[in-house]
Amino acid sequence: MSGGAAARGSVLAGLRVQLRVIGALTLRELGTRFGRDNLGYLWLFVEPALLGGAIGMVHHLSGHGLPGGLNVATFWVMGYIPYYLLRGIINRAPTAIVSNQSLLYHRNISVFDIILARDLLEGAAVGGAMLAFTLFFGMTAGQWPHAPEKMVIGMVLMLAFCHGVALLIAAGSIYTEVFDRVVHLCTYIALPATGAFFMVFWLPTDLQRSALWIPTVHIFEMIRDGEFGSQVPTHYNVGYVIAWIAGLNLLGMAAIRRGRHDLVI
Image 1 (cartoon, rainbow, N blue to C red):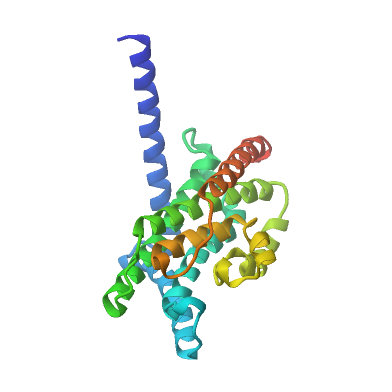
Image 2: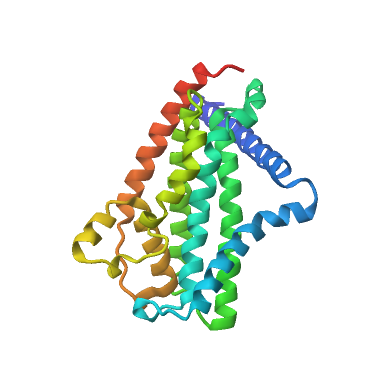
């Protein structure tokens, strides 16, 4: 076997090991959070669906319309569910290492693997809720997405963005408990600025420029472009979001690597 072929074989073998590790960590997280019965696993998808549906129903019953003639329930649900992904990943980040610290005795398990497994689980749950509501609104109200691939890409970008933030928070939690105390509060305070419950074209021109500095605003705009299409104008720059994602994840991985040396297990 040539040196190049041997190297490729080694990389593939290592990748298979890491995939098995992440799969095992995901199943462990499922059992820890929801128990080992089927109803517990079902709650993983039902929780974001119920919360998103409740918010959509409240605003639908209020009778208030939206600019552009948007379906009220669809707008609020499709805004809340991606925000639920953001909130869930970031709020759980401070305890990611502490609650799984004993696993780091295993040579093949890293801090990055633990956080990635948790975030992928959260992404699968929220993605399932998003799919359920997309089908529901399509079959009951005829509100089928104009470009479902944009919604999928938007959710993947949200997951990648939140994962980068979670890495930084998890690394910081190694050194201080402050993150565990303030992260929940910060996610609620930041809610009005995330873009979950407004569209850029609703804002005055000066505020539009300010809003578009926030990467999550671009992600919500992309998801709504996929849902509503040309019914309303949308403003987003995928390259800008990817730059944020790359920066956050690189910084997060560097912080996790540094923090691992100071972690006592």
